[in-house]
Length: 270
Image 1 (cartoon, rainbow, N blue to C red):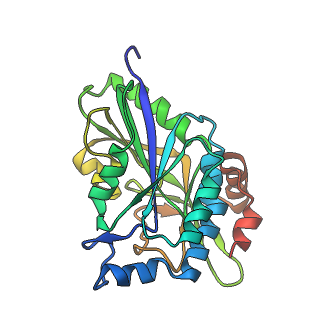
Image 2 (cartoon, one colour):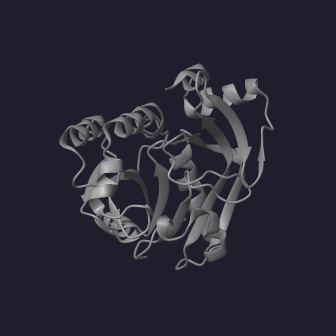
């Protein structure tokens, strides 16, 4: 489309220390840091990040994107050095470290730290450090964002929701993998297409409520996400649709072909 130039930017929160009630149950910033920076917890987060989130981003078929890794200024030195080392080979990766502050203002400031000059639109997408998107996700975002401009007023934001994918449930002995078709947009990969000067981003609303506040295109066919279920999930995972429509052979094939993941390794991931 003439004049349409799209900047695609994802944001991953990486043990971000916040004030307010984003992480309820802590009496102080120090108590939250003690929880977030627990050595065993960080070891588990890095294991999932290195096995799932990072490889998925590094192998995107469309390499023209940016991901902001929003972390705490107080992340312990050895873990910050490990994060920097993992991301150093990737030109699309940028670490943004913030002092303790309210959750959404921190996210908003991270997005605003990235210049948007030369772009007519920005597509912001969300991803957690323990999840993965399929290898064609950025290309899909670019294609949908441009095609949907013919039905969307150019000055209005539009949400993109992705309802189909997989869950990886961590269990003692052997993990479980199954497909899911959500009724409302899952957080993994959800996006907001907006004019470049728009001050907000996809995190401004809960992902389940995107269609309540924005015009929303919902993709119910593409297998977009791999979400993990484990002891460190911040929210209590709940399903809003159907599960286990596919046989295990189909699940394994799609994971290999669309995500570049080996099902046997996922089932053994500790």
